[in-house]
Length: 64
Image (cartoon, rainbow, N blue to C red):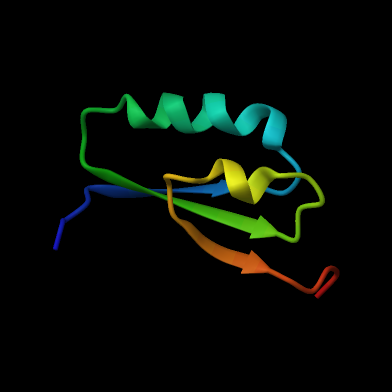
């Protein structure tokens, strides 16, 4: 199991336009880290942009 120095949490809600640049930027860090993507029922394709990253949580009920 990989031991990470820190975790980064990225909120993904309707940010498809900016997500690729954000995740590519985070991937350039030399320190061991994990990226946790959290999507709260986006109406765009934000959650699909998380691939090959892992989408940890995706709320399917809007307004919950």
